[in-house]
Amino acid sequence: MAQLETDYLVVGAGAMGLAFVDTLLKESDAHITIVDRHAKPGGHWNDAYPFVALHQPSAFYGVNSLPLGTMRKDTSGPNAGHYELASGAEVADYFHRVVQQVLLPSGRVRYFPMSSYLGDERFVSLLSGEETQVTVRKKVVDANYFAPIVPAVHTPKFSVADGVRLVTPTGLTQIWQHPDQLPKRFCILGAGKTAMDVGVWLLNSGAHADSISWVVPRDSWLINRASTQPGEEFFEHSLGGVAKQMRALGQATSIDDLFARLEADAQMLRIDRNHTPTMFHYATISVGEVELLRNIKHVIRKGRVQAIEPNALLLDGARVAMDPQTLYIDCTASAVEPRPMLPVFQDNKIILQLVRAPLASFSAALIAYVEAHHDDEVQKNQLCATVPFPKNLAGYAETNLANIKNQMRWTQDKSLRQWMLQSRLDGFGKLVASVMPDDAERMAILGELRSQTMAAVSNVPKLLAELR
Ligand SMILES: Cc1cc2nc3c(=O)[nH]c(=O)nc-3n(C[C@H](O)[C@H](O)[C@H](O)COP(=O)(O)OP(=O)(O)OC[C@H]3O[C@@H](n4cnc5c(N)ncnc54)[C@H](O)[C@@H]3O)c2cc1C
Image 1: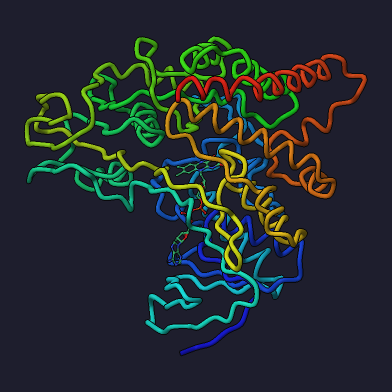
Image 2 (image 1 turned 90 degrees about the vertical axis):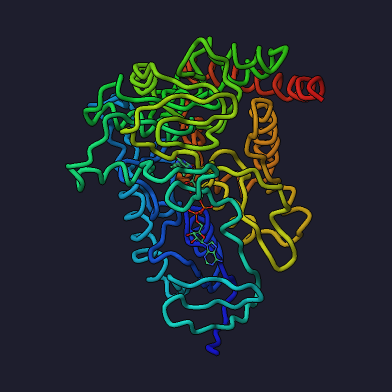
């Protein structure tokens, strides 16, 4: 068996693993070994459908030391006027460059693609079958705990009769290969961000809205992309938007009231105003995309798909007749399966999780900074308290409260505060720091943000207690 020694063994070369390694490399003199089953760095982005893109601007995504994107704004399409969203191919290429241009040239990183971690500090090459025993001087880092489940690697939970055509979003883009079997109708299964991407792609690529059916088991509240823009010119939308979100959290009398306020303030969007969403997963969308999706009128709200028969869909609550020449597109992979929150630091193990939702890259980079500069495990876990990913609407309030509490702890740690100011992944941090004291308008927005955040901290526990 091959042997090697390293300080940190990182399992997973996705966004979180690479953001962690990049910061740890900069903040320490550690030697790091990365193993990943995929052929290339970038984790789930290697399995993504061709028209996938980041939900949020490229500016806050990736690793600290290498910018992603060019701060260009889209000039056409439903995202026009907003900062570019990197496509899946751009993100995968970016992570390839991170490994080739930043990590490997340091001489302190080794990367083993096509290698599966077996536990007990051993991994196996998926190509040669050869096992390697690693002597880990410091820690094993689980950079896979928060990994999403994407359509290409998901198995549908419903049955599909012979002859029914069910494809992934990638398969949808390949129907040109069978011009003699073009579908008469399309049916999108699922109501998450992938399903929305498919709807937008179909409509933008020439499908008629009345040829599309859409199975929507639950409606979702969606973040208005206008409030996630990194540029200065969006200050009022972005930081003013966060102030509005805090005001809603601080003043809401119930969870329903909270979302009503967020919608009234244009912070949250929904596709159909006649249906009250029950889901929130941080899907982010532009007003233009929502308007486009509203053109799809054949929406089936009868629960989840149980089976697809040649002429019908069997749902939780009904049987719906369908055209036999329908192409079904499986968007039912739940990208974010709920999982228990664990302490990040556990003796000789680190489990990368969110410490600021929904920013996975920033979270992993901050954990690396804390690992490099702090020794006491209790203090480290206090600084890196895990933030739950919302499972339901109340989860939005819970997640925000956890985000705020972490932010408060971080601002009390001077060196961490300094690091955050330099971090390109730190959302609006730089925008806040750039405000000049004599800029009365922006100072007023920041003042409002601070006071509303304090109101949120006192109101959210009451909201959550009432639910219990
Ligand atoms: C469509 C989509 C859009 C998104 N947009 C945004 C956005 O705009 N902004 C944002 O902040 N976040 C966004 N996210 C979430 C974000 O991409 C993060 O990438 C996410 O949290 C997962 O990153 P990860 O590194 O944890 O997982 P992954 O990317 O899945 O990486 C985990 C890696 O671990 C490897 N692995 C697992 N087990 C083993 C093993 N035993 N041995 C070896 N290797 C193993 C896998 O091969 C994989 O490469 C988006 C997610 C999706 C699905």
